Length: 374
Image 1 (cartoon, rainbow, N blue to C red):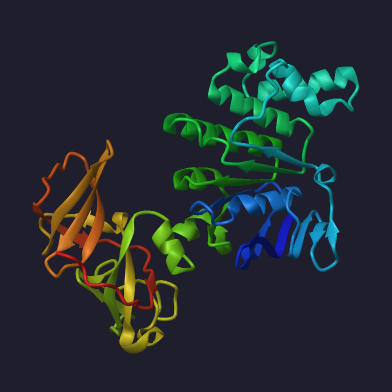
Image 2 (cartoon, rainbow, N blue to C red):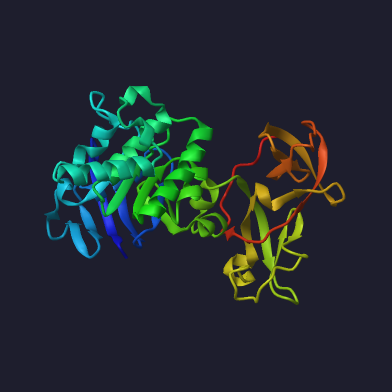
């Protein structure tokens, strides 16, 4: 792996002792890959980024790039930030207001000859589509353009790793989406390895080759984006990513392999879950006591179908343009969520037909839950 973190731990002092800001975090990025860390506020993702940059000292573990050890707690090794050849892009741009756009980009290139420096600045300006703005001041640019300048300045010295800490969080949603796509294209063109921190799930999936979900200082899962969504490693990841609920279920043996019985009937394909009994399609009944478990049903697993035998009452609805996000309640009391095309504009309190259409079966051990209020 190009970037390697092994059992990284950082602790912060507090009145009752020390608390883990990051605990036993292990991840790897191949050269040219883009990784994304996501999680709730205070989960440790920015702290982990700062440790890679050298702005925080490790209490445990090791960090290496291209086989070179940058930090090793056991050996007491801590390479200074300026010696790591790592670029950083922050949320607040941190541009120099008294310098032109070109001079901001060239700030870290003073070691180059004048002609080479100018050529590199022009290359970066073209890369981020701001060749026309070279002589302007930062305040003359929009927020999105200023963030592109910050990206160009970080890439100009050709860092071997680029770290980005929520660089688009202050921008509006449409601009964030467009810049996310542009960022991925720019990093791909440069062949730059990058690690990106965000709180936006859509942004994480749009940018990342690998996505990591953090919770209370722990890296709960580090995997391809598709696997994080469809094969969550822990209950927290399953609950944090996407819209979904857990419903009581039972795995039973069937003639064609295991089946899952739920409040919506047996789910999966034509009622029989595909794949051999030992495949990842579905656990065996013996995976849980008496086969009893909880099944993750995401909003995209539930299909509105007036002809379906299962009915649910609409409790809440959120209009999202092309679709509604319905919160539904079955007669048995279980709550579900469903994405429904917005031309199906049902009213709160209405009963509609629904069915489960699942390609991925995600189950967890049952947990005690307080009784749902009427």
